[in-house]
Length: 227
Length: 308
Image 1: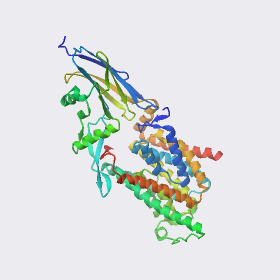
Image 2: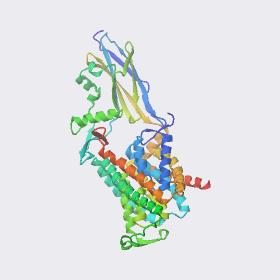
Image 3: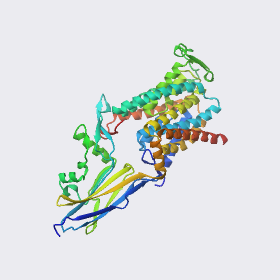
Image 4: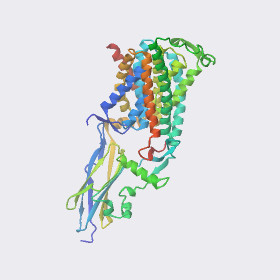
């Protein structure tokens, strides 16, 4: 019994976040249970990874008293959103290599940036500043023996698309079990209608936009002439 | 807050009443001075968190709407030279097509921020400074009871020496068509790079370079702005898919009423006093944009959207 690897179950309270006209970010919970703990210290790490977004980073350089952008460096492998929630500090849970293999923490992002480590660190720092990359060492709470819960706050700036939520169980610094769940953030209703129109028929959308603008201007003028 | 609305293209959540108010304020200034107001609105939207490309593109729809609203008010009082506006807009169309390519190249080189800030500093600074100097001079002459000095030259060779002369009856001009075309093209390039309609350059250029009567300058500038910004909106939607119609509508809602009030308010001020106000506004925006080039940045690195 003690040699049997512990099993993990997990799910999301809401696997489909709907972006409507009143959307201002969302909060979902990951909950789950660990079976067969065998009285060993166990840690749960939740990694939420958003869709990749193409990006570039440039260093600000001072020339002739003015701040200019240096040559932009392409960034690949940067997710649009990345959150690691855990039951305690990541470096107490496992060493760097094990975390990297599990994809947990900001050090394990598969970033490829030209220009060296300064540029890579800048990408992580700037994205963290926007609230899109985060590490929450108190994000996972064991609510009862083997039963855990993690709250994930998705800021309004988190991109729409397909997300993956990995729930990883660590024991003695090793990842022993793992569950993955899909999470989608998608536009619905009027938001979906407008966005679909704008991207699928851009020229018709442009014509409609111009007509609306001109008609609104004319209508206001006509309304004011009467009074 | 229930009044926050999620913008489908910009993909940010903004406070709707705030945007309507911003639209009304800029519309008021637009109707009052005969400028599009893009040089005000673009920095304002970016400050409110709208991504810059979406701000520039959606703002052009707002400028088209508020300009339509006030041009109708002006054309009722015969204050629009449609022929001159058409010539300026033809040049503007060529210029903005070229400007879009220039901007694309700047963005690939990572220097779009610099170009925008420099363009704001140089053009707003120069235009604002010149206008302030001229209009303060006119005001102080009036206070001392002196007559305005006569124009240096009644028939400048730039206007009358070039070929392809054309009659502009509403402006009482019979001049070469080339200077207005070139002016329109120049403004078109700037509007694509700076995300503005270009009225702040057109209005003084029409007064001082083309020698148009002041009574038709504002209306004609607005008319030209409608044509240029309609084209810009179409191009931005078609090529870059950056026009957020919800954002445009919120701005328009405030803008069209603001523009009406502005056009009415302008009748109550002396033109010189109006020009002093506009000059100060232009200078302030130009200098504050220019400050970004000099002040130390918050972070030594900056993220840019990739691909260009």
